[in-house]
Amino acid sequence: MSESIAHHDEHRDDEASKLGIWLFIFTELLFFGGLFITYAVYRHAHPQAFHMAAQQLDVAVGTINTVILLISSMTIAMATTSIQKKDKRTTLILIGITLVLALVFLVNKYFEWSAKIDHGIWPGSPLLEELGKGDTLFFGLYFFMTGLHALHIIIGMILIIVIFVRVRKDKINFGNFQLLENGGLYWHLVDLIWIFLFPLFYLIT
Amino acid sequence: MSDTTHHIVPYRTYALILLLLLVLTSTSVAVTQIELTRWATIVALLLASTKSAIVLAIFMHLKFDQTVYKVMAIFVVLVITAVIILTFLDYGFR
View 1 (cartoon, chains in turn orange, green):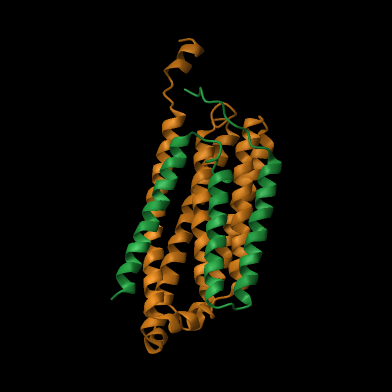
View 2: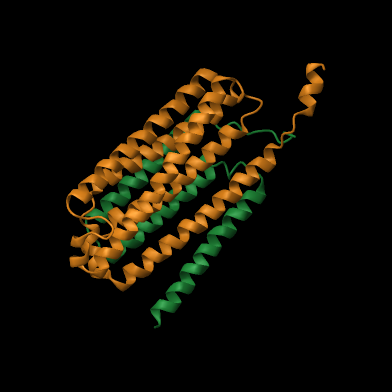
């Protein structure tokens, strides 16, 4: 079979693929939207406790992680530019930087969570029980929402590793880069969620 | 298949957008640190909304994509807004 015929047989629909990832992103936005509403309602019900609890979160760590995610969003967005410019080397470097930044984010999160746990704060801890309903709700939501977000970071990293390997093997190239674009869209979603988590948990006290 | 010509966004655009996002981030940190109580909350949420709109438009290419994606994104935002309003109409008047 000649190569052109083999190429013809390849079934690919980039537009449908993109529509698919967007639909997934919308379900994710509604999912986190529900959690944000839960947060808002409990904050409304326990303003004083939420105020005191939020002051215990480290604004500096939150800000650093925000900057890290914003930069990583830019690097993966730039990768869709470099792949279209047939610049494989730059594409790999940009994807690599995104991965490293994602890892740094998780390391920060690890230290942040460890510090909280060292202070006796974890879901269902005796200290929280003593502090009362409002603190329990705040830190419950904090651990659940940032944990869920971290899970999305881990899934995103796996996806980006797959993309990295495929770019290396030229399976993703300037004529076929929808997976890279979709991976980027997912990564921006992770960034988008953090854009709201950051002010709600760290800034507004 | 790929009849739609892909818009190649220059590196510079992405860099400038990042810069803008970082400025907005530091603004929201500054505003909330000087404790303007109720106003700080509103400003921080407005800044977060602005940031997410920028990420959606440029990083996620909504500005350059077909209209259908924009329409769907706006619809989802409206749904979330409606649920927030309804929830607070409920909790506000109990």
